[in-house]
Image 1 (cartoon, rainbow, N blue to C red):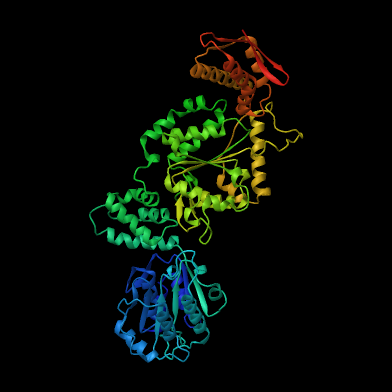
Image 2: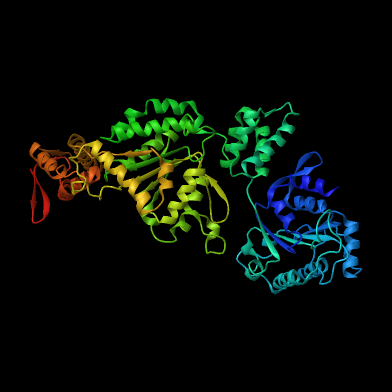
Length: 617
């Protein structure tokens, strides 16, 4: 092979391997981390083959005319691509007859340390070999310190970085190269800090998740095999390959191959490869978003929702529009391509106590048929620094990291769900940064490194932002203002919060036009709510104690005056006033009522010495 041919073949290797190749003349050791358990497309003649990380490295070193590549891990032991050549090379380098042909033998840490010395001698090596050490992160139990023997291994490795020599022979058209040692770890922090960050002779190589180009190439490679099979998914068209590559954003090439195997097992056609991707990610076969019954429920949902959430026709209609867009897959349709992120996003804003949380619950029942798919987080509990660890999970090394995060665990258990983040403006800013990832990519990586997907979830935020901000006139928002004025004021306040206060306009951009502003409870709705609350209190007295309670028109007028005069606190405020003015004195009356066959007739409600009392007969 000529130098030009070598460079042509090298150009077909993944970028991270070309990075290793470029540093072979100047670095004696490498630390590879990140996507180390993936398959990689490596050139094999005129074609490409999927190869594991260690095999892909082997292919690169073979291209550079290394005589043998040794691989060691604490389970499979020591192996070599050319066992007999490796044995002769080890003998020539060490002068030790005890180095037998690698055949899966397990080595003690002390023997592995000696192997590093042999591969990287302090004099010019006579033979050109390389050593790959895999599963280094698993040398010690999680959270346990490395033993002295392990520290001796890494001290020896660091010493050889500074003292080993390059080989006398060079690869085709190259300067002399080191006999490299390549450490494969989950994270660089799994190695001693003094080894990772203090030497120019050790090069860190992050192996990234595959890019769209890499996934497109892998999809084409997979399609070659599918075209030869009569069974599903069968041959894939160019458009289907493009969709497959796009839908697998954030996935490994190995996962892409597993998706196809899943499609074969479930007999999913290439035209429905989306279903196989979803099944692989969330682990469920049935997709409620694709059920015809959901469209039927949404068509008739408006009347039901208006009965549950009073006085918010605009919010209900807007929510249903966004829900229909999510259900039909029309989210971000104007942008072309395929949509990323959750199924849908809603940002409920406006006065307190007007039905924002209740509408979220109602949407859950409409979509999923039961309230169990409703996951709520009160973000006032996540306002302090470090609370993002509670929500997303602590990283390895911290107490409780094995438990995962509250949010990530909830989505992993119920990927088809409505997730409500109440009072989102109270969340810590670090959490807001995480929401950017959720809204953009529809996924989140927890502290342990596992990824959960929000692609089948509906995300709902609630906020009271704007209700404490003064109007241009200087006064605070009030129930007498029109809905249009309230809508404009709240939207402006939310915009200022994300752009000026948080400095995160990109989050607002991801939310887009999905802000739904709720109206104040107007007097006619307040009167209706009062009737409902009073009816509920009377029904409870009858159900629990068998006592009929009757209120005169005068008593109802007192309730209307006391409970519906100030609507700033919404329906919740009306309910609280009903509890103070009616429920508390009614409980006293029921407590002392000794004849359940005689009704309690309330003629009036009066306030005496700071407490409300019923005038009964």
